[in-house]
Image: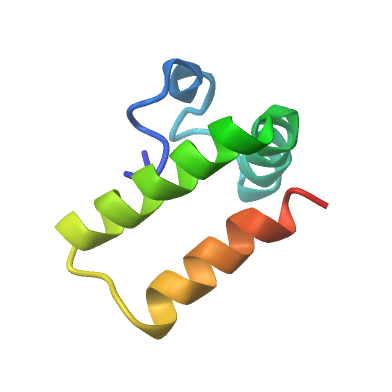
Amino acid sequence: MPASIINYSWSKDFTPEMSQKKWQEGIKAKVAAMDEDEFDLFLAGVVMAASRAQMMGVMLTEKIEYFRSLRV
């Protein structure tokens, strides 16, 4: 389970057996359903999880941009 979503109650909907396409569709639906404040908190969680994993710079920016692209 990606650290970005493990702390959310809906993370149980995502199993290791899921295909990448199904995972992407599911996470897109979850992110799109968030209001602005909820999404901001979600991104803060993404940044904190990335910090724990010592991810920074371009890799972190790409991760944030990926989740932002799901909001469209």
